[in-house]
Length: 608
Image (tube, rainbow, N blue to C red):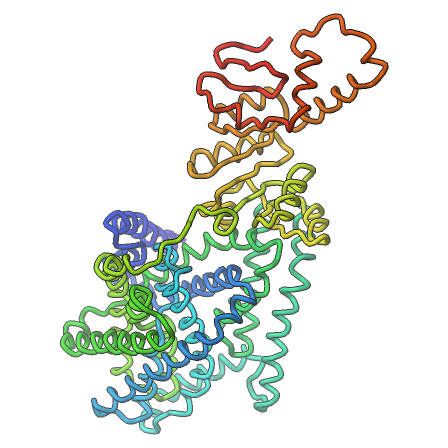
């Protein structure tokens, strides 16, 4: 227990110190994690820590990341990317593999070894690229979308590589590692549903497993979440989200498919689910921690003694890797219509080798395709290229991108509703009606509510909604509050309304908040937290009811004795024209208008 706590403490303190420093210097979190791994590497070696085993565990962060990426990518968007997936992504894998195979042959390796090296080095780092693009806000750009298409194709290409590499085995390597390979085969056979099956049988089992993932995502997610929602315990939602991701990864592994690819497919299936943001907000913290752990292990796994003994060779191979992949991507990107900064973002962003390289190198050694000494050198090349990758992004952002700013066409970023986004917290009597009116006007909205029955009713009439607690910061972030222009707070509970308004006003000053108030005193609270668009939930309806009463023949014939606050004329004037919103009367800093008749109460005086 003590050893485990010590190792966990070392990893945590390394990340806590290194990442903020790297981020402050503009280097990005990825480089911070890598440098932290390099610093603690000797300590982990002294403690006899199996860094590679920890790295394999941390790779599950990549699986979670692709699941979250899939949640953000609807099937229509994926279909629209088919040309880039097949042409740009497929072309990159084929051309890069061919180029590296040629380099391997030039170094005198057998064609089987050279081809295996080419396949391994053709892959890029999904973890580094997607994490960096997300941090820098470039994932939705043309270059970011092209990069994502290539990465997705590479993840798909890993599957045929795993089937093809054993066919390249070299007989002369068999005696040295025969026992290891035999043990590995036995282990994989016991954990596989397709081992020992004919090709057509394995294909049917694989397709059946994929169909099960799609069916489960469409028809089983909602009933499971409805069942869990009855307990109203947040930790159960977190456990359910992990249950989905780990279960899908396990199913894909049992049929020999990439767990990352399987979870990505499941994410795409769930992209239109009302539980999408709840899943994302629960998975995101685990994803971040595991990715950070993975990057630290990459830095800690560098063999500096081997690097010193073969410095010239390793540096030459790493440089050749980066230059070759950059050239291939520049050519392909230009063919597929990328220009300027987007083209360089694609080329420099994917110039490194990927984390699947660690898996394929070990797999190639165990299948008698690569010798140990070659695999060790390639492991250093892969690691160093990943270590240099954040530097390439810095080069792009500080040197290359500014030169192309003038080429970017100007866009109207403030137009509503094309670019703007409205988040409605609560789908009850007020929130549901607000959403229907905005939807009828063609405005884009995101509705968040914790009442799954209410959300099901909205879904039946075609209103898009999402399940979750709207006061949770992580859920709001997943719903896109950073890019939103308007937040409508229409929750039922006064404390929840106040909590959400306070958080939104403090953390998102650009956001215009329209809040529901349950009574006059609640208006004071919301005003104190900075909200200036406050709507009393029963005030307008009460005034309309009184106006109708005063119009009735029974009351209109009799003059009232005394009006303390209201007057008949003020009420009739109020509804002779559309009711004035609170916002129109809220521009004065000295006076706080309260929606209770025509009287305005000063903050310095208590209303009587």
